[in-house]
Structures are given as C-alpha cells and as structure tokens.
Image (tube, rainbow, N blue to C red; front, side):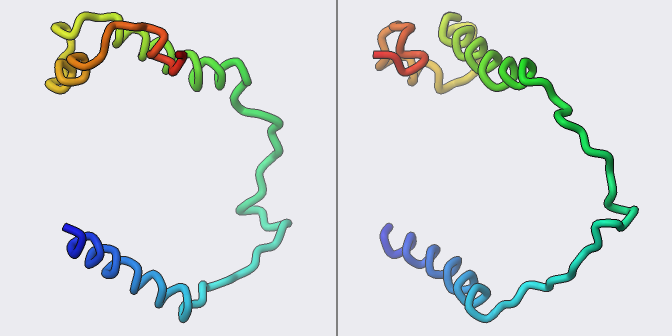
Amino acid sequence: MIAISLGTKTKVWIPVLLLDVTGKPYQRGFFCDDDSIRHPFHDSTVTNVILYIGGLGLPIVAVSFHNRTPPEQHNDPLDPVCYSGLPPIYPLDFGIR
C-alpha cells in the first residue's frame, strides 16, 4: 500500500517539479485603455444580506432539516451507518459541545 502511494506521488511530482524548474510561462502585457477589457466599476453586484443568507443561512437550515428528519425518510444508504453510532444530540449539528 505504501509503495503504491509513493509511486503515485512520484508520478505526479516529477512532472510538476520539472515544469517548475525548467518551464517559463508565456507573459504578455495589456493596456488599461483597451476597450475590449474595459467595464464600468460596480461597487458590489451582490448585497451583503444575500451573501449571508446563502453562505450561512442555507447550510444551517439544510443541516438542521436533514438531522431532524428520521433516517427512514432519507434516500442515502449510508445514513443508517452514520446514525448508528451517534445519539440524537442536536447541538452536535453545529459543533457545540
């Protein structure tokens, strides 16, 4: 198992190392007054409220809903395995303990 892991890592890291040492990226400049890349400045296109709802609210609601529904209603075959060793302590949903 260790030999397979080392062999796989070696096959990946040798080309990465060679490209890092010998390769040079192609560089080209750009002009700030180029009309093809000019766009008007917008302060923010997505409001903070929407970001908070999508980034915090939806995951909290999804985890709470999933953990409070009985495992029989879930379609995931691993749910009985996950629930078998865990008592139904809801503060654990969010890492509080």
